[in-house]
Length: 308
Image (cartoon, rainbow, N blue to C red; front, top):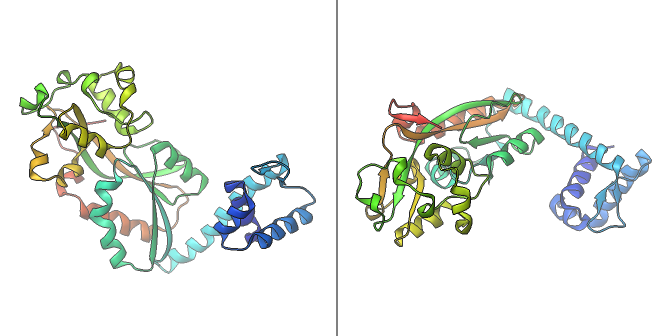
């Protein structure tokens, strides 16, 4: 039994297809199939049912795959211990980031980080909070940037910065004439929100006390915050945007931005890792790069802010 064989069976389990698994592992299909077959012969069991499409693990195969995932995570940790001992800033680092954070935060620090540390291969994936949490548990991510503390005993969480929410208001809305927005100014019928499952949506629905928003938003399940901003600019409704998004707006677009009345809704942007993550030197560099890339006033919770 080899580490390589365990990587192959995890790939087959992921793709449920030998050819795609082989492509992912950068070997030929006959090579991968032969290695999986050799492992099955050694163990004396069939790990996959090849008579169905897509292929699927057998009952005992699933147990072996689950254990293989643990073994590979532990093997990877051995390498990480050595990297940390050498204080190495190289190799692969897998980072999950919320879709409502990534477009506004990553451009502020990521290119500079890559230029400073060219041997560091950071692979970023946009994911919802629940998916980041699950990936950290499974060992599929090294770290995640989320928008609230999960209070998960498996994870270590550190606040990066605090980010206010702003209203983005069409010129045709009555509230456009107001200097600040109160929750009473917002109704679900005029509000563009992300799909359920986004913590950005959930936090603001609670803040605005709009329990009926689910019903009124059935027709508005579009893809992204940027889509909703274009809708507002075209003269329809209200949406919410995070503070870092405001920084990227043109002068004309900023005319549509309105702060909330005090206390202003604010999210806590957090860096989460598993408690057994060992590459602290790399993590420290990442944290410092992020913190230096956001306005200094965002590093502390302000007295006028309401943490969601």
